[in-house]
Image (cartoon, rainbow over all chains, first blue to last red; front, side):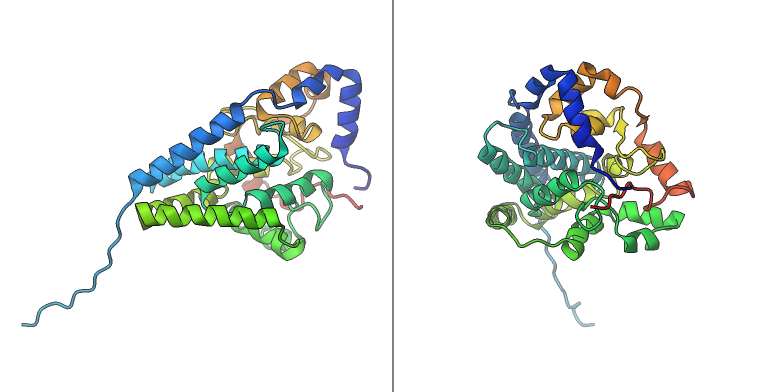
Length: 64
Length: 245
């Protein structure tokens, strides 16, 4: 296929018909920041719970 | 392993989606805050990737469908070698390796100072995790990243979004339960129309301009997408819209 990427054209046409959509494009709420803190804390907490000390020991069995 | 796959995979994938949003600068009005939070979220997945992802992902939007520029397009080598049903299944299973190696081999760019900062911070965090919590905790963090974009239901969106299940349609929405965990990533047409739109406003875009979206085909089940992708002989990695620049 040749030709420009379709989403660019759609963006222009949608904004011409619905200029109110421009307000939706600005990050006005802190949801992403809050979610970031929650998810990082949760994943690191699971890592903390999972911590398993791994000890590799080689033992030579005692002789007869 | 169940905990790692279920919880780590889901949390890891949502972390990747958050990084995706931050690299689109849609988490906060300030650019620096977005980049800082992208790196912060990257700590949870252990392998430095946030800033690099942002660089190559912006090419996916700006050069959509252009071979060797759009890192989302399978290479010809991949399309030839993962053509069979088993090959397509293995393509999905090996997605983490393929997505990392594709930009490296075909469209490698010089490392930026921000990528170096990203790597230093994440590696330091890994060292602290190992020092205070041991190798098990570090292994969990390092596994959650790759496992969440590979053989995991949350990662099926990478197949669903742009493979031409309907000829001539380049981008597909998905409506189903995974949009809750993937932060509305299923609103993919809306996302490509407005890449800077925060994830929580994507449904509002569809609602505001329904005449632009409701006629488009969409998916309702990721499992059906994966099964159709693997089983249907008419669908393979060549089923992508390519552009000649």
